[in-house]
Image (cartoon, rainbow, N blue to C red; front, side, top):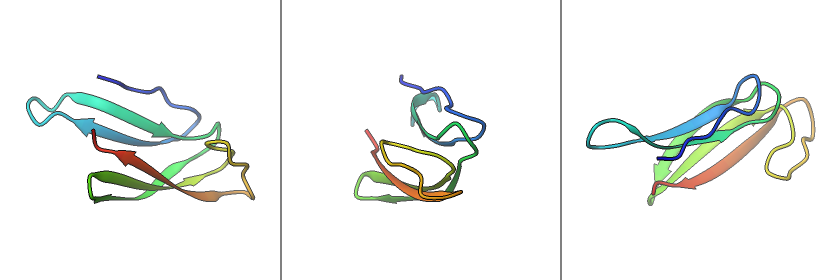
Length: 77
């Protein structure tokens, strides 16, 4: 089981639960030190697409304003 701690005040989180007992199999956190939130989530072809609003730098990309949109892709395994 893998989990991640939050990064800042608010973060966007994706959690995979076990089909067997509902336990957490893994969690992924997308966030900056500021206020970030998930805006949409979609599943396609075994991938999870998370659209989030972020208020700071994330993943090596420098923020271009007060709030930016980020699309993160996670595999379901």
